[in-house]
Length: 304
Image 1 (cartoon, rainbow, N blue to C red):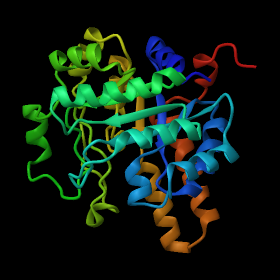
Image 2 (cartoon, rainbow, N blue to C red; image 1 turned 90 degrees about the vertical axis):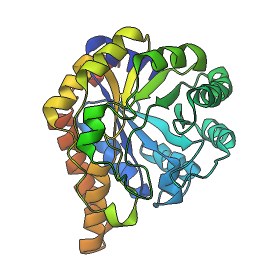
Image 3 (cartoon, rainbow, N blue to C red; image 1 turned 30 degrees about the horizontal axis):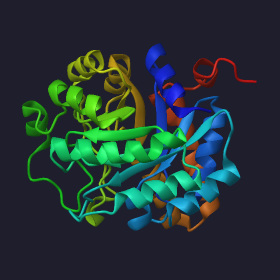
Image 4 (spheres, helix red, strand yellow; image 1 turned 180 degrees about the vertical axis):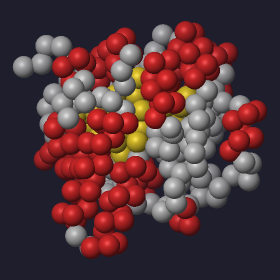
């Protein structure tokens, strides 16, 4: 399957491709099975922080695990957040990670240079596009400040951030960024919140987030590439569906599956039980929250 064509198709028909994060390796199997059993199409993805701070071990181990449980025609393998400046505000040698991912068989990659200036973000994303595009690998980038991936929580209340649109992606910056960076998909800051990684926040419910649907629609109108929403957990269902209608074509979901897995491990210490919890929750998210059950036939019309 061609991830670029599939995400573009989702945009054209007003649907979305879910992307489920893998902070723990055993989560690959139940997510892949849930996607297939709901006749959906979804990405299984891992971010650098998930092998640095959780238990996905490495991008190569995730690729190996994915190869065991891949569901052709239903699942795709994506490399999520490879930061240029990470959540601890340290510089990352990001291009070798991108090269490793391409070699390991990841079908698309994401570079996050959003902590840099607009010019720095463009240059870093362009460098990744130059590495990935010769292999037919699409590149996702991020523009704006999506809250959450910090070792310390922001002191600014969420309601103030949303009201003042602090760090939100602007149409002006996005237009220039897409034109000059070479990215294929753009993650935009429109009100969502990344899953927390601060140790004292891992088990807490994410703050209720909203989406600036009007900003999404304006960005969609101005740009010729699909938009991505990070931090899909914790947003009201009606807002998610409105965001999809406005132009979101890929949505990342992490906390909604990580917390049930970790809770099950704490309660029973049984990976099989934890996998079952993830499987059931993933099916529920696909069917009732994102409403992408049955989308495989829509996004891949000529599937056998």
